[in-house]
Image (cartoon, rainbow, N blue to C red; front, side, top):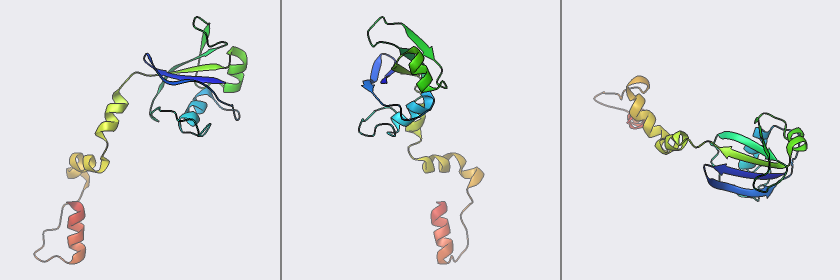
Length: 141
């Protein structure tokens, strides 16, 4: 089957033929494809957190060809037999996930800043601290 992946007007992955290895849904195929489990030699530059907006199946790759929208939970073998071997995945255009990932680059730092008062214990305030207590305070800080 032939696969294309787009987001907005940009093509993230041009048409490329892939084998259908076994019975799975169209969504499972997409997930395995972007994780490199279908064809590891083909490098697909799609974020693992991208969400599918809609999926179109068609008989031919030519412009103006009739396309059918399909649910991501349809069985891929049955769908491609009935509606065509060309599957075009359109990804959602929301940048919420991307901006969230940028903010979460250092998760530990964010956790400490936002939840310090709620979840993290306070450091020990003794006159003399043994080595374990010093280590404990260093970890908390």
